[in-house]
Image (tube, rainbow, N blue to C red; front, side, top):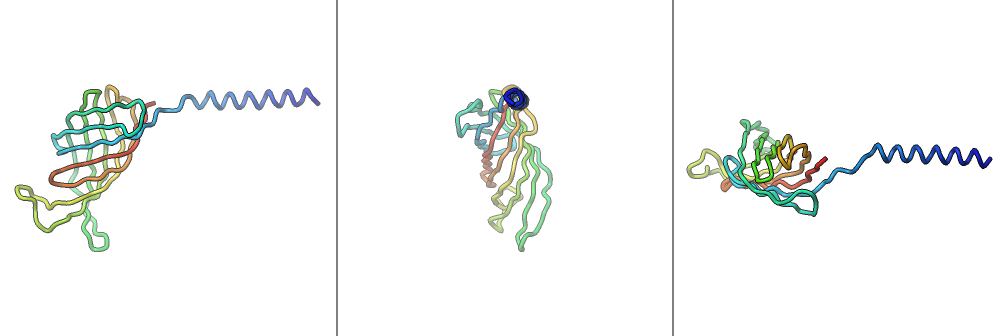
Length: 160
């Protein structure tokens, strides 16, 4: 009877050790904020919101966007944009894809521009990177305002 218990215990231990070894080390996940000013040829600052492997970074940003998809919800016009930001910092570059819903807050266009001021919210995810951002994944939520054009993205970045 004791030999049977020893064999069962040994099998259970082997299965447990195999499962732990297969899981490997947990990826380093860190909460960050990315503030962007004037996304098309503007600047950004990446700020860690908790301790981890990512450090503060800053640099230039460029923006590629599509013409918006327009929907009406409960009588309000919503412009849906699919943006791609390219952040070029001191530690490398980071490409982020964002889906943003933007609403107007005025009937009057901004002087010198062909749009009305507005606010938006969205979601974002990392789609590429170089340097310290190579193989980084992550995403989160964003908020933005138009004129002056400001974007704040908060979420998590994970390094494998």
